[in-house]
Image (cartoon, rainbow, N blue to C red):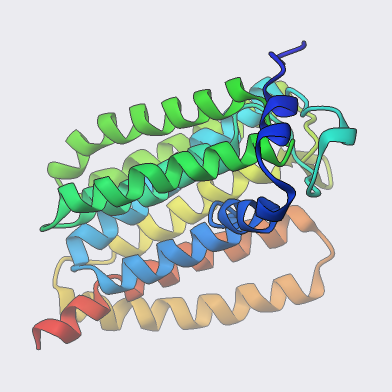
Length: 280
C-alpha cells in the first residue's frame, strides 16, 4: 500500500543538510528509551495520585501503540530515503503517538501551569513527528494518525484520570491484555518471540506486564506509609527471583515480561517519592 504523496522528498529538499543533526536530535526525544526515562522521572517527582495516573496513562498509550502496530503491520518508506536506521513497522508512527502520550500526559498531570505546559509540549510533539518525515522513516499519514490517536486517547483517559489514579492503571492493564490478544490474532509480527509453543508480540506483552505489575503493587493496601514498606518487602524478593530467571533463561519473551512487570511495580513503589520529600 503506497501512502506517499511526495512529502519525504519535499521535506528532505526543504531542510538544509546542516540542520540534519538537529533534526535527528529532535527525533531522539521520541525514542522509547527517552520516553521511558521521562516517565520514570515524572512518576517519581509528581505527587503520588498524579504520578500513578500519569504512569497508567503512559502504559495504556504504549499498549494501544503495540496493538495498532501488530494489527496493521504496514511497512516504512523505501530504505533509500532513510537517514537513520529503524527496525519496526511504519504505521502509525510510534514516535508521534508515544511523544503525544508521554509529553501530553505530563501536561495533563500538572496541577498548576497546565496551559503553559501545553504551549511548550504541543510544538515539541509536532516537531518530533515532523522529524520522522524529514529523516525518511515515516510518511505524513503515519505521523498524523499517530498524533491523532495519541491526542484522542489523552482526551478520553483524562475523564478516567479525574475519577481516581487506580482506574488509569486498570485501564492500562486492560489495554495491555487487549494488545496481547491483538498480537496473537494478527501474528506472527516482526516482533513476535516464542517461549515453547507460546508466541506473543513483544511490543504488546511489555505494556501488559508493566500494567499488571503496577496494578498489583498499588492493590497491596490503602495506607501510604504501610503500602510503601509492604511493597518494598514484596518487590525486593520478586525482583531478585525474577532477575535470576532473566539471567538463566534465553527466552526474549519471558525476559521482556519479567523485566516489564518488575519495572512497572518498581516505578509504582517509587511513585510520589519526590513529591513526598518536597512536602516534608
